[in-house]
Length: 77
Image 1 (cartoon, one colour):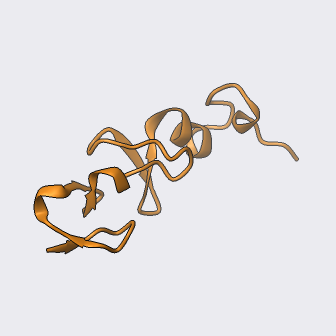
Image 2 (image 1 turned 180 degrees about the vertical axis):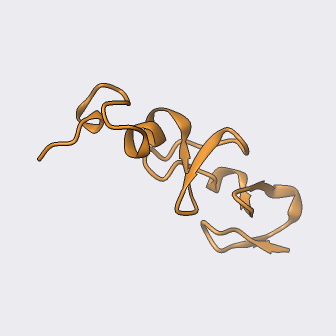
């Protein structure tokens, strides 16, 4: 048995997916921002948390001015 880092539930190995050096329940591997379910290897990581590559990771951590073109793409002072 192993413990999912998102929900802390111990479960059977057949229900896990490995990503970011951890083993997750498939439905628990979600984007921190938009909550979209992710597949192992098809997402980005920041501070140990998973994000979908586009648009969330790009908008939050990419170069300023890059993203969806909305308010997340710009820095306001």
